[in-house]
Each structure stands twice: as structure tokens, then as C-alpha cells.
Length: 255
Image (cartoon, rainbow, N blue to C red; front, top):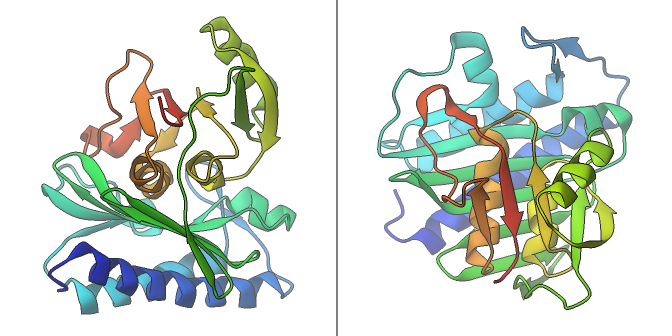
């Protein structure tokens, strides 16, 4: 296993690119979607991408256990997790994938002591890669790489990232909590965290159900960019919880 997080990050980025290529191969075909036990959609792209990522993690970090979405769907969510483990969502935003709007992501995160310390979010349809650990977050668009930083809340109010399916509910509840929302940006999957991390949005409230693999990678990128993710009582959103289900949370830019 790589001894430093930058080297591990590069291995995870390579795995995400490989998974993204497999996803795009399916994306360009006449694919179909099935339904899992929780009624969420799954495609052959989810399965193929996860297989590639798991193989890459076994090779570069064989001693670190992995919790991956499709594996958990087939075998059940583990009762306990190690203090250090990977969380993998091979295709976050399967609804966006099926709708062919391009806003689906590959998510890989390393969690340690309840905190996501390294995250990779890749949008294969847009060829945008986000990665973060420590105090460094980056964005790659094709061959161009740049550091990204969350911004302080503008005096005019927050720009809120919203989903297509929950937009009205999220906006109303945010305002009920006293947030001054000056504008909105529609974004799918973990792209919401990344839009805050790169300083073009300020707020992402989530009041519906999510699993830890949905949020860990984006959370890590946002934290490295200077932002935060907290529950409604202000506590940091933690990982390794029983059942790996998240409570409602709010992701923010720099305070």
C-alpha cells in the first residue's frame, strides 16, 4: 500500500478513470436498468465499474477493507466497519445515468476514525476529476489541473446546489432553517459537493435519505477545499455509523 495519501490518491484516480471508461462504454449502448430491493435503479455499468474499483483497491491497498454499494446490496451492509476503510459508490447518480444528462459520478473515499480523509469524485461524461485530502483539493478537466477552494459566503446570500428530484423541498426547508438563498444551481449526485468545493456554490442541504458511500468522497473533497458537512444540530457528519445511513445534513463552503 502507498505510504502517503498523495500516492494513494493517484492510485484511486487511476481506478476512477478506468471505472469511468467502463461506464461510458455502457452509456453509449442500448442498456437497460433493473431495480434493487430498495427500488433504486442499477445497470451493468454500476456492476462493471465496481468490479474494476475493487480489483484496483485489492492491488494498491490490500489490507484496508472496502464497503461498496453493489456489494452491500447483494450481501448486506456490514454490521461493523474497521477504523480505516474505503467507501465506494461506483456510479453515483444512476438516475442521471439513465436520463443521460451526464451528471453521474464515480466516488471513492478513504475513511479513518469516522472522518473521510481522502476522496475522489469523477464525472466520466464530462471528464472532470475532483480529488481532495488534507488541505489540498484539485480539479482536473482533461489534462488541465488546478487547485480549488471553497469561498466565504457572499454578502448577497448563498447559492444553493439542488437536485432535480428534490429541488422544491430542499429550497423550502433551507429557508425554514434561516438560510438566505440568493440563487440555485442544479447538479446531480456528488457534483453538488464539488460545486461548493470549487467556489461557485455555497450550500447543499440534504433532507432525504442517503448512505455513507453517497457522500464520503464529495465530503472529503469539500473538506480539503475548506468547506464542511454537518448534521442539523451542527455536529460533523460522521462515518462508520450502524447501518451506514446518514441523517439530514448541510454542506457549506468556507465560514
